[in-house]
Image 1 (cartoon, helix red, strand yellow):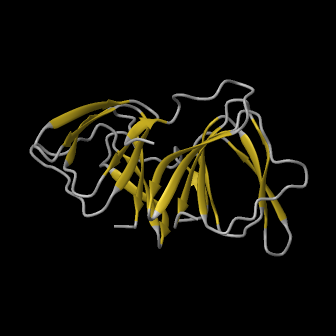
Image 2 (image 1 turned 90 degrees about the vertical axis):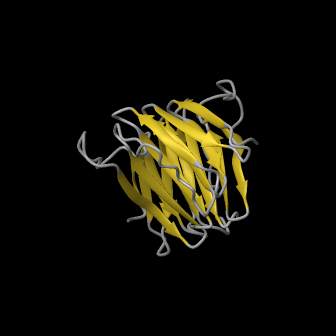
Length: 111
Length: 111
Protein backbone atom coordinates (compact mmCIF):
# COMPACT_ATOMS: atom_id res chain seq x y z
CA UNK A 1 0.00 0.00 0.00
CA UNK A 2 1.24 3.47 -0.80
CA UNK A 3 -0.04 7.02 -0.90
CA UNK A 4 -0.86 6.94 -4.58
CA UNK A 5 -1.46 4.68 -7.53
CA UNK A 6 -3.60 4.05 -10.57
CA UNK A 7 -6.75 1.98 -10.44
CA UNK A 8 -5.99 0.40 -13.81
CA UNK A 9 -2.29 -0.31 -13.25
CA UNK A 10 -0.59 -3.52 -12.10
CA UNK A 11 -3.63 -5.64 -12.91
CA UNK A 12 -3.51 -9.42 -12.70
CA UNK A 13 -3.26 -11.27 -16.02
CA UNK A 14 -6.51 -12.23 -17.77
CA UNK A 15 -7.85 -15.49 -16.45
CA UNK A 16 -6.19 -15.10 -13.06
CA UNK A 17 -8.11 -15.52 -9.82
CA UNK A 18 -10.23 -12.62 -8.64
CA UNK A 19 -7.88 -10.22 -6.87
CA UNK A 20 -8.42 -7.80 -4.00
CA UNK A 21 -5.95 -4.95 -3.45
CA UNK A 22 -6.26 -2.61 -0.49
CA UNK A 23 -5.74 0.98 -1.67
CA UNK A 24 -6.41 2.67 1.66
CA UNK A 25 -6.41 1.16 5.14
CA UNK A 26 -7.72 3.98 7.28
CA UNK A 27 -9.18 3.85 10.80
CA UNK A 28 -12.47 5.18 9.41
CA UNK A 29 -12.68 3.39 6.07
CA UNK A 30 -11.05 0.80 3.87
CA UNK A 31 -10.85 1.21 0.10
CA UNK A 32 -10.09 -1.69 -2.18
CA UNK A 33 -9.81 -2.53 -5.83
CA UNK A 34 -11.33 -5.79 -7.00
CA UNK A 35 -10.26 -7.20 -10.37
CA UNK A 36 -12.98 -9.70 -11.21
CA UNK A 37 -12.10 -10.57 -14.80
CA UNK A 38 -14.95 -12.93 -15.62
CA UNK A 39 -15.39 -14.30 -12.12
CA UNK A 40 -18.76 -14.70 -10.45
CA UNK A 41 -19.98 -15.74 -7.01
CA UNK A 42 -20.16 -19.54 -6.73
CA UNK A 43 -23.62 -21.02 -7.41
CA UNK A 44 -25.88 -20.52 -4.39
CA UNK A 45 -23.34 -18.29 -2.62
CA UNK A 46 -24.57 -15.01 -1.14
CA UNK A 47 -22.46 -12.32 0.47
CA UNK A 48 -23.84 -11.32 3.87
CA UNK A 49 -21.45 -8.69 5.17
CA UNK A 50 -21.33 -7.28 8.68
CA UNK A 51 -20.62 -3.75 7.42
CA UNK A 52 -21.92 -1.28 4.87
CA UNK A 53 -20.27 -1.16 1.44
CA UNK A 54 -20.26 1.41 -1.35
CA UNK A 55 -19.12 -0.18 -4.57
CA UNK A 56 -18.60 1.22 -8.05
CA UNK A 57 -17.90 -0.71 -11.22
CA UNK A 58 -14.96 1.25 -12.63
CA UNK A 59 -14.51 -0.76 -15.84
CA UNK A 60 -16.26 -3.53 -17.73
CA UNK A 61 -19.70 -4.94 -17.08
CA UNK A 62 -21.23 -6.92 -14.25
CA UNK A 63 -24.51 -8.32 -13.05
CA UNK A 64 -25.24 -7.88 -9.37
CA UNK A 65 -28.19 -9.44 -7.56
CA UNK A 66 -29.53 -7.94 -4.35
CA UNK A 67 -31.92 -9.76 -2.06
CA UNK A 68 -34.25 -7.45 -0.18
CA UNK A 69 -35.57 -8.02 3.32
CA UNK A 70 -38.83 -9.45 1.96
CA UNK A 71 -36.90 -12.00 -0.10
CA UNK A 72 -37.44 -10.19 -3.40
CA UNK A 73 -34.44 -10.31 -5.67
CA UNK A 74 -33.34 -7.41 -7.82
CA UNK A 75 -30.92 -7.83 -10.71
CA UNK A 76 -28.72 -4.87 -11.63
CA UNK A 77 -26.87 -4.78 -14.96
CA UNK A 78 -23.88 -2.53 -14.23
CA UNK A 79 -21.66 -0.59 -16.62
CA UNK A 80 -18.61 1.55 -15.92
CA UNK A 81 -19.39 4.30 -13.42
CA UNK A 82 -22.43 2.56 -11.91
CA UNK A 83 -22.30 2.55 -8.13
CA UNK A 84 -24.47 0.93 -5.47
CA UNK A 85 -24.66 1.29 -1.72
CA UNK A 86 -25.07 -2.12 -0.09
CA UNK A 87 -26.13 -1.86 3.56
CA UNK A 88 -24.76 -4.35 6.09
CA UNK A 89 -26.43 -7.76 5.83
CA UNK A 90 -28.13 -6.97 2.51
CA UNK A 91 -27.55 -10.31 0.85
CA UNK A 92 -26.06 -10.03 -2.62
CA UNK A 93 -24.15 -11.98 -5.22
CA UNK A 94 -22.21 -11.26 -8.37
CA UNK A 95 -23.99 -13.17 -11.10
CA UNK A 96 -21.41 -12.44 -13.79
CA UNK A 97 -18.60 -10.08 -14.75
CA UNK A 98 -16.92 -9.25 -18.04
CA UNK A 99 -13.29 -10.24 -18.39
CA UNK A 100 -12.19 -6.63 -17.82
CA UNK A 101 -14.37 -5.88 -14.78
CA UNK A 102 -12.78 -3.73 -12.09
CA UNK A 103 -14.56 -2.57 -8.93
CA UNK A 104 -13.74 0.15 -6.47
CA UNK A 105 -15.15 -0.70 -3.05
CA UNK A 106 -15.35 1.60 -0.03
CA UNK A 107 -16.03 0.03 3.37
CA UNK A 108 -16.96 2.82 5.76
CA UNK A 109 -16.21 1.85 9.32
CA UNK A 110 -13.62 -0.61 7.98
CA UNK A 111 -15.73 -3.71 8.60
CA UNK B 1 -28.79 11.30 -2.62
CA UNK B 2 -29.91 7.75 -3.33
CA UNK B 3 -28.64 4.22 -2.98
CA UNK B 4 -27.28 4.03 -6.49
CA UNK B 5 -26.22 6.06 -9.46
CA UNK B 6 -23.64 6.48 -12.19
CA UNK B 7 -20.54 8.59 -11.74
CA UNK B 8 -20.77 9.90 -15.29
CA UNK B 9 -24.51 10.63 -15.34
CA UNK B 10 -26.33 13.91 -14.72
CA UNK B 11 -23.21 15.98 -15.22
CA UNK B 12 -23.32 19.77 -15.29
CA UNK B 13 -23.06 21.38 -18.74
CA UNK B 14 -19.56 22.22 -20.02
CA UNK B 15 -18.41 25.58 -18.74
CA UNK B 16 -20.59 25.44 -15.63
CA UNK B 17 -19.20 26.09 -12.16
CA UNK B 18 -17.29 23.29 -10.49
CA UNK B 19 -19.90 21.02 -8.93
CA UNK B 20 -19.80 18.80 -5.84
CA UNK B 21 -22.35 15.99 -5.46
CA UNK B 22 -22.50 13.87 -2.33
CA UNK B 23 -22.87 10.21 -3.30
CA UNK B 24 -22.71 8.77 0.19
CA UNK B 25 -23.23 10.52 3.51
CA UNK B 26 -22.28 7.87 6.04
CA UNK B 27 -21.35 8.26 9.73
CA UNK B 28 -17.89 6.87 8.93
CA UNK B 29 -17.18 8.40 5.52
CA UNK B 30 -18.46 10.82 2.93
CA UNK B 31 -18.09 10.13 -0.78
CA UNK B 32 -18.48 12.86 -3.35
CA UNK B 33 -18.19 13.44 -7.05
CA UNK B 34 -16.50 16.62 -8.22
CA UNK B 35 -17.03 17.75 -11.81
CA UNK B 36 -14.18 20.21 -12.40
CA UNK B 37 -14.52 20.84 -16.14
CA UNK B 38 -11.56 23.12 -16.67
CA UNK B 39 -11.64 24.76 -13.26
CA UNK B 40 -8.55 25.28 -11.12
CA UNK B 41 -7.86 26.60 -7.63
CA UNK B 42 -7.70 30.41 -7.61
CA UNK B 43 -4.18 31.84 -7.87
CA UNK B 44 -2.41 31.56 -4.52
CA UNK B 45 -5.19 29.47 -2.99
CA UNK B 46 -4.23 26.31 -1.11
CA UNK B 47 -6.56 23.72 0.36
CA UNK B 48 -5.73 22.98 3.99
CA UNK B 49 -8.30 20.44 5.09
CA UNK B 50 -8.94 19.29 8.66
CA UNK B 51 -9.49 15.67 7.56
CA UNK B 52 -7.84 13.03 5.42
CA UNK B 53 -8.96 12.64 1.81
CA UNK B 54 -8.57 9.89 -0.76
CA UNK B 55 -9.19 11.23 -4.23
CA UNK B 56 -9.20 9.59 -7.64
CA UNK B 57 -9.39 11.29 -11.01
CA UNK B 58 -12.08 9.21 -12.72
CA UNK B 59 -12.03 10.97 -16.09
CA UNK B 60 -9.99 13.60 -17.88
CA UNK B 61 -6.69 15.07 -16.83
CA UNK B 62 -5.59 17.27 -13.95
CA UNK B 63 -2.51 18.77 -12.38
CA UNK B 64 -2.36 18.60 -8.60
CA UNK B 65 0.30 20.30 -6.49
CA UNK B 66 1.13 19.05 -3.01
CA UNK B 67 3.14 21.02 -0.52
CA UNK B 68 5.16 18.89 1.85
CA UNK B 69 5.94 19.71 5.47
CA UNK B 70 9.37 21.06 4.51
CA UNK B 71 7.78 23.43 2.00
CA UNK B 72 8.81 21.39 -1.04
CA UNK B 73 6.18 21.34 -3.75
CA UNK B 74 5.40 18.30 -5.80
CA UNK B 75 3.47 18.48 -9.07
CA UNK B 76 1.41 15.46 -10.09
CA UNK B 77 0.08 15.10 -13.63
CA UNK B 78 -2.98 12.90 -13.21
CA UNK B 79 -4.83 10.78 -15.76
CA UNK B 80 -7.97 8.68 -15.38
CA UNK B 81 -7.59 6.12 -12.61
CA UNK B 82 -4.83 7.98 -10.77
CA UNK B 83 -5.52 8.27 -7.06
CA UNK B 84 -3.78 10.09 -4.24
CA UNK B 85 -4.15 10.00 -0.48
CA UNK B 86 -3.97 13.52 0.94
CA UNK B 87 -3.45 13.54 4.72
CA UNK B 88 -5.18 16.19 6.83
CA UNK B 89 -3.48 19.58 6.59
CA UNK B 90 -1.30 18.57 3.63
CA UNK B 91 -1.62 21.78 1.65
CA UNK B 92 -2.56 21.22 -1.98
CA UNK B 93 -4.05 22.99 -4.97
CA UNK B 94 -5.48 22.03 -8.32
CA UNK B 95 -3.31 23.74 -10.88
CA UNK B 96 -5.45 22.81 -13.86
CA UNK B 97 -8.10 20.36 -15.06
CA UNK B 98 -9.27 19.30 -18.50
CA UNK B 99 -12.79 20.24 -19.46
CA UNK B 100 -13.98 16.67 -18.82
CA UNK B 101 -12.29 16.16 -15.42
CA UNK B 102 -14.31 14.19 -12.86
CA UNK B 103 -13.03 13.29 -9.40
CA UNK B 104 -14.23 10.74 -6.90
CA UNK B 105 -13.35 11.83 -3.36
CA UNK B 106 -13.62 9.77 -0.20
CA UNK B 107 -13.45 11.58 3.14
CA UNK B 108 -12.90 8.96 5.85
CA UNK B 109 -14.16 10.17 9.19
CA UNK B 110 -16.46 12.53 7.31
CA UNK B 111 -14.46 15.65 8.10
